[in-house]
Length: 189
Image 1 (cartoon, rainbow, N blue to C red):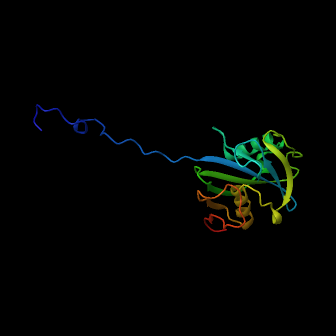
Image 2 (tube, rainbow, N blue to C red):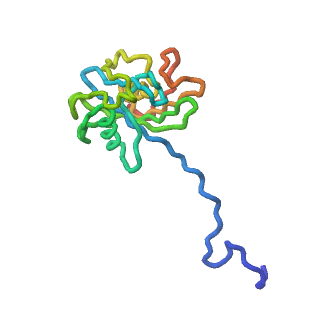
Image 3 (cartoon, one colour):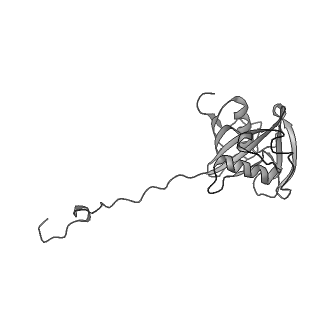
């Protein structure tokens, strides 16, 4: 370079070098699921009119909203879906499942337990999204469940606190007892 040639951008004193655009960062929806326990039973909700898993059993659940932590989201969802007024002391984080449903983007699910009686008596507070609420024993869960939800319960019962549950694209979102689970426990129990 001669004194009369313009300097390249990166060669100018004090200039920041040109860098490529930052790579796209991975993002996931974060879900919360309530394992409301009554003895050896858990409360399940039959999904309706949501466009996802309608007709299947699922735990009371929902998405974390902007500005919420997972515990605040679980408290809000329990109030909205089953009328419970839980406090942070009522909840215990039990399992985290990274899930990818068939043809879907990955999501992260936090599974919390609370004991029956905490926050009041549960009732169907969203009849437009829930056909019914019923108690099911943990040893005899219905087969017509959302596979992701069932895996969260199974992981919790096994003592697996962190699990990856990746479903192949050619499977259903419904639990299928004829096919082995796509779950991979991470770390010690």
